[in-house]
Image 1 (cartoon, rainbow, N blue to C red):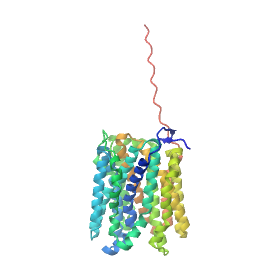
Image 2 (cartoon, helix red, strand yellow):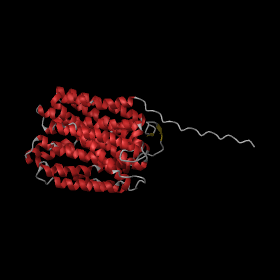
Image 3 (cartoon, one colour):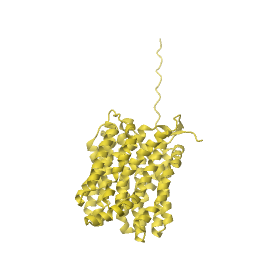
Image 4 (cartoon, rainbow, N blue to C red):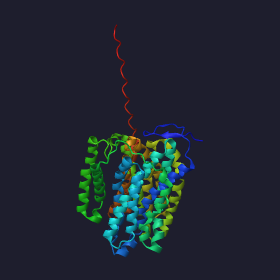
Length: 469
């Protein structure tokens, strides 16, 4: 029997008397993870349907890719806004609004007959879906405490990642017999899960929380600029240059603005906290590696005669590991602490990328399977660790906004990973593009290899001198 421990923001561990989660609480974490995972299917499953969309709407491959990129970008940009709305109105109401928009847009998108209409509905679908990752992760932080929270976050990461891994398989199974339209409507499956979590969702409003629309606009501008700056090959150098300018203007502005607006969309406490800042590197590294591999593996294998179904079967061991990974990563997170867990996760992510690059260069299926398995373990350890550090860096009144910002960086990392591999793959080969992507997790590993600064002790009050009678 291992001693229950609590993971703190600085990675310290202390004894906990909290009882283990009941089956109901464990099922609650799984249900929240399923909601999170289904939003990821909006990218992974639809990516498999792009050839069918291209044929049906008479599009080039590059124009059809907008169906995925507009969803992913809207998902990232909307996350900090919904995170802050969760602070303002409680988690339940903003989640209801976001999911209503997502479901309505999914139904409309499955019925349209032109690319502009599909892009509009997919953008709205992404904006609505942004409520799900931002608010479900905030719900886990609010509903669980101590070692139960660490285990719940491990379950959330493992189950959510498993559903994302199954995205290409689900997409392939639907596209072949039914076409692309049912794939766009996949979010309707969330209607089966919402009743399981509805009564447990927090409704408490946090005092002192504000929306900060200007800060949200600056964060959104930086996110859009980051994605556009990598699209010179597909959208042209002018668009890429515009994106770079937008990124260079908006990103520093929103950070500097946090000094004057300490409780804005980018909390000043998060900016000042070294552990939280380093956690943003992990947040970008994990999904960048996964989506970079998600682009590389099918592209390389189908070019050598593999079918879509065979590629999907290749990912099944990774999905199976995701279901059992929480039994490994949960206790590991509690024992190692959040900083050391992120160090190990970053090293594992870099190793997975190197294995994937080797497998892509040699067309070695075993190496590619090994890469996905290593990345799944790194994902299951790194995501709950980075969430713990960021959540503990701010007060509970602004935790939803901070986690929304973390979700934005997380989702943006996925977009950047896919864009980087897609943009550099033709110039330096897909394996070479993957190796370039390894810079992100290596940077995160170097950041966490350095010890975190100790908090400054508060000065002890000086005793007052005694007065002579």
